[in-house]
Each structure stands twice: as C-alpha cells, then as structure tokens.
Length: 241
Image 1 (tube, rainbow, N blue to C red):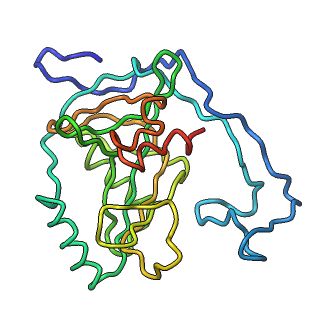
Image 2 (image 1 turned 90 degrees about the vertical axis):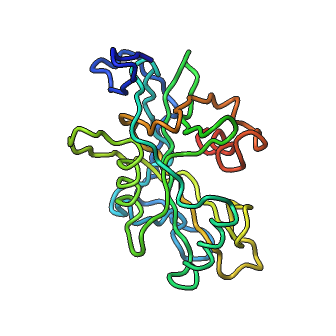
C-alpha cells in the first residue's frame, strides 16, 4: 500500500502482474451429457448469463493477483440511505408495497497475500464490514446494476470510464421478513421473500470512499466467523472453495 505526496493514497492497478494464484482447476461437461435435475426436466444450471449452446464449465481457473499490485486511496464520503436499522426496514416495507421484493447485488473482490486468498471488504467504524454493492433499481439488469454500483463506490473520479468484469454469480441469499436474518434458501413457509441478494465475483478496481476502509480479510479468518462478519461474508470460503 503506497501513500501519495498529498497524504492521500490512490489505488492503481499495477502494470506488471508477476505472480498468479490458482483458485480452481477447469473441467467441462460434455455437450451431450443429459441435463437432469429438480424439478424434473429443468436444467439446473440454467442462467441467462450462460450461453446454452456452449459446454457448461463446472470448474475453471481463476487468477488471483498479489495485494501488493495495488495501492489504495480515498473518495468523497458515501453515506447509507438509512440512519438506523429500524429506518432501513421501514423503507423496505414501504418499497415492498409499491414495487415488491428488493433486489440487491454485491461484488466479491479477491486478491492473495503470502499465497493465501483474501477477500476485500469495506469497513465502517471498527466492527461493521460489508461487500461493495447495493440495491438495484426497478427493472434494472443485475450485471449492469452491479457495474453501476461498483462505479459509484470504487470508480475513478477523473472521468475515465471503467469496464467492470463480472465473472460469476457465486451465491444467493433471501430475507424472508422485514428483519435482519437472511438465508441461502427460501424457507418453505415463505411465499413472498422481502429481499433477494446475489453475490458476484468482480475484478478489482480503483478507489474507496474516505469514510470506509478497504481491508483484506483472509479466508481462514472469515470461515465460520459469523459473529465477526455476519452469515453472508463468513460463508464466502465455502462458496469460493
């Protein structure tokens, strides 16, 4: 991490990426393989971001570059829409009555340090951690919406357009009620979940808001550590394994 002469720190991708860390190997399903699943007759891997005319890749290599390839800086403060948890759920209730279930997307940025994968998190204060992302607008595409949100949070301020690379959707979480608990499934008795959150792998970009601190948390620290990071972030080691 390198500080500039003005006292700020800026995050710039290094031109040279000498070291690469392999997270997974590659394996391709043969094109003629029978596609079965539950419900019967439904392609369990169906996704509008996957071209169905090509073989499905179940495992592939993801390149992780060292944290030292980047320097970190600050942007103008970015404030939460709601002043309290109660206000957040009250706004969710009001929006649910008007537009239905809230859709949110978050980006998972991965680097490696000492050859161990680290997830980059936004830290607010001393105990609150979050993935970069936020709420989608009504009718907004998930990938395009995530690109918009990543630009708002981490984008450059010099007018240079950024083309975010969204790699994969790696997780889905649902909020069944207007309450904090979220689950990686829809409980059987819930017919109208209040929020659907998707997690995507995203290429790292440039800066962070000055009231946030970008921290690199190793997977072994996140694993099974819901008290420290919450159930979603602490599940990332399993999703990325």
